[in-house]
Length: 202
Image (tube, rainbow, N blue to C red; front, side, top):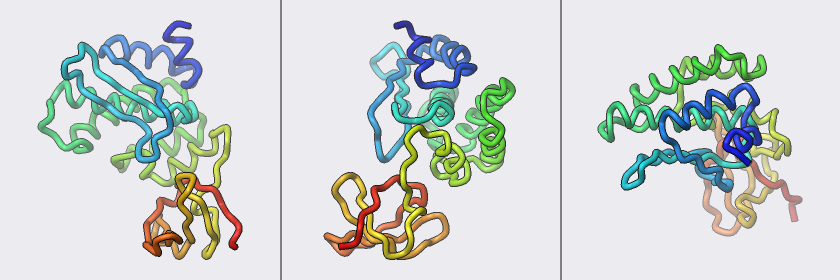
């Protein structure tokens, strides 16, 4: 299986050529990785390697995968131009990210609802696309396996997080939810769109 055939498993078809072009142009070693609960993608500069390294979680739907790849590519371009002497998600990175997204937007790759959400996202770019609740909510509609999210549960509901930790929903605080871990009685803030496994109260 060649590189474009592999990309076709994860990207919208119209995005395969531009992403492949970027991979070749910037000498990127792209890794499709396991699910990471703390991040969707990652960029690592060359170091002792002759290539830049970008990783993206394998379970993302094609549109989320593309946006995550562009997020990490913007880190690469920022590093190439400015080195380490910039904030990870500062104005330089935001400028690179916006430029790359606009290159993709003119190709009509996204469905209308995703394109509208992306354009709104570019007006106030956040450090992570997951931090943009409206964009994430739209993107999750294209997931093959729809997951239950914290915001889907009523107050007092109990859920499982990370396969073994049990929590109770206490209250909503803007885009996050206060939840109490049953084993420790500690209170944590959960992003509204965090995927969880609902449980029946004992």
